[in-house]
Structure formats: structure tokens, C-alpha cells
Image (cartoon, rainbow over all chains, first blue to last red; front, side, top):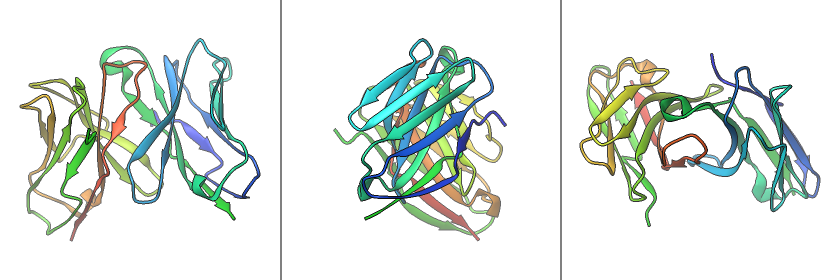
Amino acid sequence: SQQGEEDPQALSIQEGENATMNCSYKTSINNLQWYRQNSGRGLVHLILIRSNEREKHSGRLRVTLDTSKKSSSLLITASRAADTASYFCARGAGGGSQGNLIFGKGTKLSVKP
Amino acid sequence: NAGVTQTPKFRVLKTGQSMTLLCAQDMNHEYMYWYRQDPGMGLRLIHYSVGEGTTAKGEVPDGYNVSRLKKQNFLLGLESAAPSQTSVYFCASSYQPPGYEQYFGPGTRLTVT
């Protein structure tokens, strides 16, 4: 399988705590993206980080990328119950059809009020 | 803008029956994709299209056919449904990769008995 691996598979925290999810991959990338999926819904894009970037922020989200270790992490700060969802990383390789995204299996986050 | 829409939302088929899933996007995206999502498997690419009149195989194309007669529509067909095709199907669209996010539809839940 070309899929990346997310870690952990499931995470349960209290509201207000930070949540960290990790993603590892095996081949070279052009970019790495994170998506959120609420139960029974389609995926929603959160953030994209390019291979020449090391860190990116968007609101309460912080994404890091370490291409030497072939890994990325997503940090959600001051979590809310509404952050309860599954989070997927997806790696994009080269251009054209090679740029098709390869999705990981996801981390299921539960934020308890 | 409606974004990406999928029809139908739910469907139950008997083994051997056929059906077509319709995906439509109003963002003028060149690329369109069909994925299936199974528990614990993440998203797997079935077929994709890089433009009107073109289609290509993804990771799991067997048992499915697709057509892209109009730029805004991407159809996924099951000619003879099998229980192994019970899944949630997602359509997505994007500008030409790499480096662009994918926009997802709400999904179609298909059960084959």
C-alpha cells in the first residue's frame, strides 16, 4: 500500500487540551495536506504544506513537516467539542496524475466537553 | 456555489444489479476523482479524470467504470454490483495538481446485499 500512516489511530482528550496527530510516509512528496471528516460527511481541507516548508499555521492549527524523517504532525490547540472528527493526512507527489493524493487511514479525535 | 454534489445519497442494491453515481462540480475544476471509503482503510482512489473526455484508473478500479462527457460531471458506474462494493463513495475535484486542495462531495452510502 502507498498509504501513509497516522498515529495514533484514536485520541480522546478534554476540551481545552491540545491534540497532536502524526503522519508518516514512505516516498518523496511535493506537498502534504490535512483534511477533517465529521461523522457521515465528506472531507474538508484544513491546510497544505509544501515540501520546502517546515511549519505552517492556520488559526488553532499548526502543521509541521520534516522531509528528512518523512513525517508531519498536526497540532490543534485549545481543542473544542466541535473538533471531534477524523483527521486524515494526504501526500501529493509530482505533477499531473503523479500529483494524485494518497490518503492515510486517519486519526479519530474525540474531544469531551 | 454548490461546490461538489453527489446523487444519490443512499442506495441499496442486490448482487448483480447495476447503477450509476453522479458527481457534479461548479468550480470549473479540470480534475475529478472517485474514492471509496471503508472502515479502517482510509480513502482509496477508484478512477480519476484530468479533463473532459479523459479517464484513468486509480488504486482500486476493478468492477467500476467512469465517464466524463462534460467538464462539470463525473459518473461512476457499477455494471454488476457485488457485496464487496458495499462502501461509502466520495467524489472530489481540484485544479491541476500538485499543490491544490481537493473539494469533496457529501458521499453516497451504497449497500449491496
